[in-house]
View 1 (cartoon, helix red, strand yellow):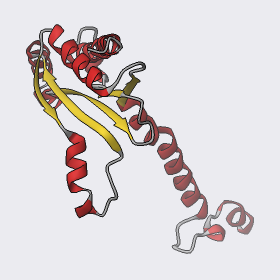
View 2 (cartoon, one colour):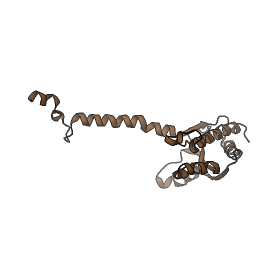
View 3 (cartoon, helix red, strand yellow):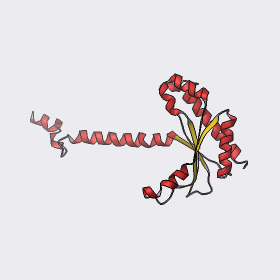
Length: 185
């Protein structure tokens, strides 16, 4: 009996808080694995970006607007995001915005909006869609186009789902913007 207690008892390996050491170690390793495996992946897969080589900010802006309108969509807002950062920097004790220029372009497809909310009313949160243009202080000659990818999981994986079609639209807009932005209006 004593030998069995010596071999199988976790009391000999207790952590200071009283939890068996091996359980504490197992939970810690599991938590570390989950953070490493899934924490950064979602952030990296959530946003797509494309450097618009051979373009400047005004040309990229015009190209994005043209690409959106060519799809039959209406730009609902152009938000001067960098201006907001510059305006609030001092009150937040920040030295400056990390951008030289940055704006958010919002638009919506009524066809996709209807499809998505009919699939799930909560998908209203995905409208309007948006794409951003920015130039950072570190890469002052590089214009970047970025957009959130609508996650496709579970029932949304079906071919032709609203989220899948929204993702395809954003990819088309990105390609068209890249093509047009090199033409320098």
